[in-house]
Amino acid sequence: MSTDFPVVFALYPRLTQLDFTGPLEILARLPGARLVLAASQPGELTADCGVVFAHVQAIAEVQECALLCVPGGFGCAAAMEDAVYLAALRRLAARARYVTSVCTGSLLLGAAGLLTGRRAACHWAFRELLALFGAIPDPGRVVCDGTLFTGGGVTAGIDMALAVAAHIGGAAFAQQLQLAIEYAPEPPFTCGRPESAPAAIVAQVRARFERVWPERLAAAQRAAAALAHERASPAAGG
Image 1 (cartoon, one colour):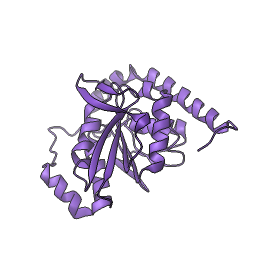
Image 2 (image 1 turned 30 degrees about the horizontal axis):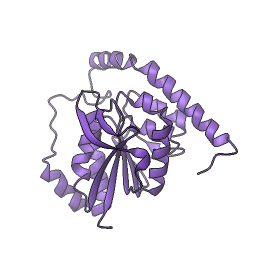
Image 3 (image 1 turned 45 degrees about the vertical axis):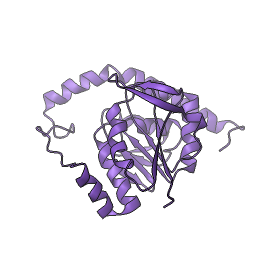
């Protein structure tokens, strides 16, 4: 591996901070890792919980990328229709050795045209939207399709990053990272997935997500239509 390994986090307003900071904790420890935080608008960026990240670069100006990581979050609907952001994802992914996402970040990879015919994970409540972009929705917590690594909902970002670390540096290296951060989750309840959660809990959480479902569905449909139009255009290029 080169001594310089730029890890680009493609951010946007109202992302979920753990989608970003979970994998960051692992990926920052890769040999030669150089972290780059980038978004369509440079400066400060506010996560959906109110945490503010500073010194964010303009993603259109980022040139080097060994690993691209796209987090999910409540702002993903708007990001799916951000032409500057999607163009940057396509450009950076073409240069990256690894393309990764967490939670609904895979919808953004899909909107950028990067998941056609590829298996990908997503948050369980929005996984079916991947099909709009020609992706193959996969219920796995971490899904590896070549050098494309996608994680399911929020906390799967840590698992995804460890899988990438193992691919880059070997299993022993990834295990050292896992031990260093004492990643040994013992949740107090067995309800981290809808298959294992009580039916009443699933219904209550689904009701919360149903409030944002129309917005995300409409944004995904428009993004898919725009992608199809772009691909059908005679002027479309790589």
